[in-house]
Amino acid sequence: MYVSVSVYLYDAGAKTASHGAFRSGFIARSNSTSYETSTGYETTVDYQIEPRKQPTVIAVFGPVTSTPGPYELRMVLLAEVPGHTDPHQFRHAVPVRVVPSGAQRPS
Image (cartoon, rainbow, N blue to C red; front, side, top):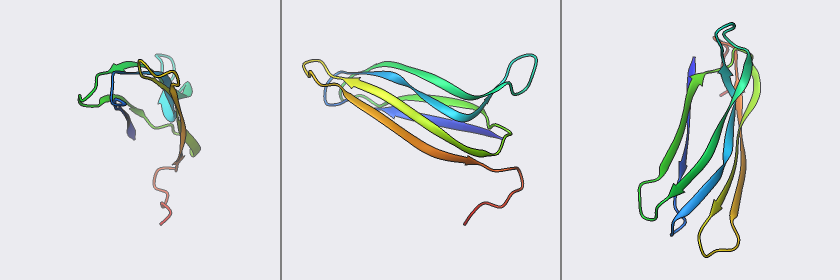
């Protein structure tokens, strides 16, 4: 099973610089010697968003870990706007639960 995670970055009414990262703890990472060597995929964010433009999207696609349990999508971003001395920091965690294949989902 595969998953896609997308984060949309918008301007703050002026040119906005966004820096930080988001970590998808439930995406399996692989290498040439083993299918799943570790869990979690970290994406670096370093973008300039122009005002009144379409949002910038950051997307990650990958296999879901085969290990059931609770995980998180964690985001930490710093948005800076020229002329503003107080950048805004976003910290957010979205809980994700991986269930075994064929298991019933809670209703």
